[in-house]
Amino acid sequence: MRKVQLLDSTLREGEQTPGVSFTLEQKLAIARKLDAFGIDFIEAGHPAVSEEVFHATREVARLGLSAEVVAHSRALKGDIDLALRTDADWVGIFFSVADKRLEEQFRKDIDQAIGLIQDCVSYAKAHGLKVRYTPEDTVRSDINKVIRISQAASEAGADRIGVADTTGYMTPSRMHGFVSALREAVPGRTAIGVHCHNDLGMAVANSFAAVEAGASVVDVTVNGLGERTGIAPLAEMAVALRLRAGVEAPWRLDALPGLSAMVEEMSGVPTWRQAPIVGANAFTHNAGLHVAAVLLNPEHYESIPADLVGRTRRLVVDKMAGRPTVKYRLEALGLDACDEMVDLVLAYVKRRGVNDASDDDLRRIHEDLCAMRELVKVI
Ligand code: HCA
Ligand code: CU
Image (tube, rainbow, N blue to C red; front, side):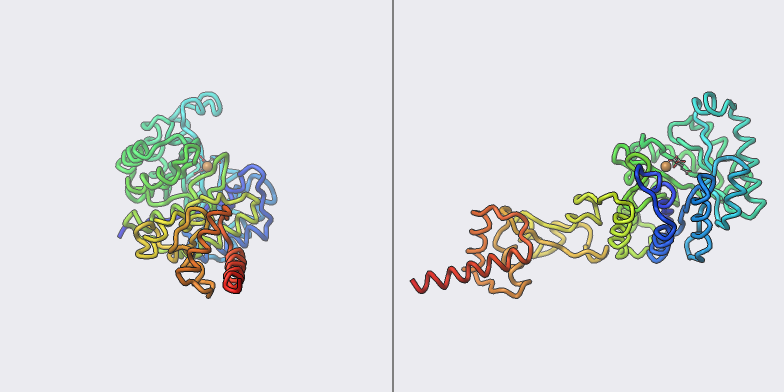
């Protein structure tokens, strides 16, 4: 089976989330937890940003993790030198070849850009780094320029070309076409990675399409952190690859809820209740009809086994509930769940508009109804 790898950029792209800043201890804790999950690469920071980021990137690189550590870098020898001093395994160099960026920002033509990238790649390789080159805003750049500079980077020894959808512009079929064309043009010894922003909510879908077109590395962040709306979330991507891509995907998926909760707490960015895999509602059933079918066979309303990703199924008792839900919840609490009691609880819940009854709510309702039933008998 073809191998696909995940690069987690929570410490680099994730820290670009407005308002998010991790301490060194937090970064080391996140890196260790990602390593325990079995992540393939950790993008630890852009050392030129500050002393602090340099230091943290070096500390992550020196943890001796199984994951390979990537330092982010502009196409500048000074940035590459800093990456070298962190002891990272990789340097990820970015430089855009989008027409407007070349003209307005860099004042270079494509041949000058190619020369610069070949110099940077050769320099980093000569100093023992593995190299990823990303033409930033890859997918809105002229594909012929992307192909030319990617071939040149490959020739200079680049190990990977990064395809960045920097602005979340793509759709899955466009992404498939783009990556297929690049994969065909660049020698097979150079891998292709993707980095998809989520501005249209398509980051996971676009990354998945890229994998189907031959990309072998996907950039993610825990909880999808990153600039603006972030990039593809680790949990969704890892599970989609495991369950739907037919590729080797050997990560410990049951570590995902713990990773998500840790980063939620450290970043202060709350996880949406509806978030796939890690959100509170991801394995919660509500409507009575759904619950009845799920209790018969979970497959009727589930396509991801909860235990695969370290979660448990939850059945909600509210106005939507039916007898099977109430019976199941009462039995789980070790309470009397005879037909009469189930009907009483259900009638109470519907009349009183009880909303998502907790175990304690149910215990209390059950107790009150038992007491009332006794009272009625006495009278
Ligand atoms: C950035 C932009 C980047 C780079 C991706 C990469 C993007 O924040 O520097 O270097 O592979 O989205 O294009 O994150
Ligand atoms: Cu990005």
